[in-house]
View 1: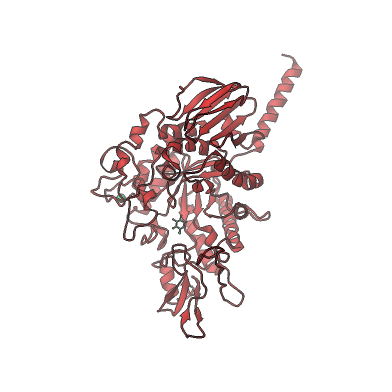
View 2: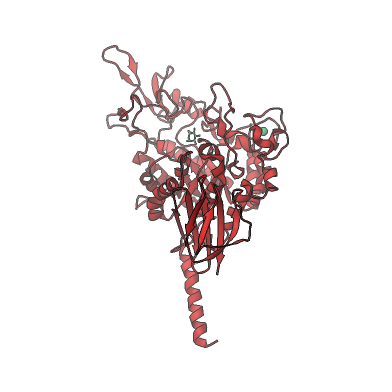
Length: 562
Ligand code: GLC
Ligand code: MG
């Protein structure tokens, strides 16, 4: 080889290396993130309620299925009025879940396995049983303004006392509750047992940072910030709270213009980001990631990431796929994906995909059983972070009969115990009963069965997470790294590309008709992952320059390498 050619090759190589180096991908950006709902994941002590030692005993499962990071719904002490989203002590573990030692052990084992662990953080409200609230009722020193208190209004005609505004709580009723003892109303955007903390009070902000530091010092890798869009509310200079207007076309639904998405909420997030970055500067280690939970428009979500001057949460969750219902087709998926990509990707080169969580009906129930594995392919093939809710990897549906109390929690059906195997209580617990009933479908729908069945939901999931290690998947931030579109009303395509080296293509038919396409590309590709509706075999070749067919609900992954 001539000297010149070697120099040219060396220069090209350098060029390629630096092009990749420019596009650094932080751990949270391409993670396979998994939500653990601690009550329902794994019970270690037979009381029918999942716990931390249970999670620890199942950490190896995450490695098996290619999960790289987890986030855990609240594990703090709580009267469980909202299943832990009502915290009575932010630095104590709920005893039914275990002890601080169990926590440290779980975290250490997770890190040994190279798994990141993110904690749910509930900053908007505490439990009414929290010591802070009890002290606030009594106006104890330093706690007087810890929550949002107000005298309310006096009706000029009747002389009757009324709440300060017409605001409604997310779970029904007024957002204001009267406390005899203090002779004032307090604000709660959720249940009356979840009083809103007052973020206009610097002491509250400081206290919450102390709480964060407590968990960061134990070694956690980040926070999922709960109900971020509810953090701040509108309050006039004169101390009054404005009524919200009635939504057009409804009788009593409020347009939540003063209780949701206030810019002050974003400011709080910026302050926490500064705190987290400073923590990393002082203590080293990887990025402590902040995930934002806000059911808000992409423009608002973009503001949580940055306003141009200040930075906030790395990753607002993308709930667009939680909105997909039975009638959703490839075009709906494209619309929902564009909604995110046109704003968040365009501005921040960040994407993530959530299709399930503990607040929403599970995808197989919402969209249909026949589409679930195709959706797993799509969710993982789209660029960025996939977020999986426990049980999603085996295609667990809702269990309509599940009910945890009287009244039933409307979200119980999507929170039933994880289905590990065909043993008693699906291997979730050795107890005589479980906090929510196990879905009777566990006998055939469980991890163990699906390990042994080709093309099971679990195998599709594993196949997709394995693909994340390919060049084509890693190149997603590079020019031409991905594309997606609805090829027809029912067929969705995602392409991942390492230019000139590798291409991976998902073709998913979400409809019940045979579909065909001509000349999609001049490549011949190999079938590397197939759902159970596909008549093809692994390793078969497909010439995409000619006509290709997709059977009803068939979803396939094709691969080409140079
Ligand atoms: C979030 C949680 C939900 C909870 C609410 C109030 O939306 O995901 O489960 O009820 O916040 O904390
Ligand atoms: Mg237990």
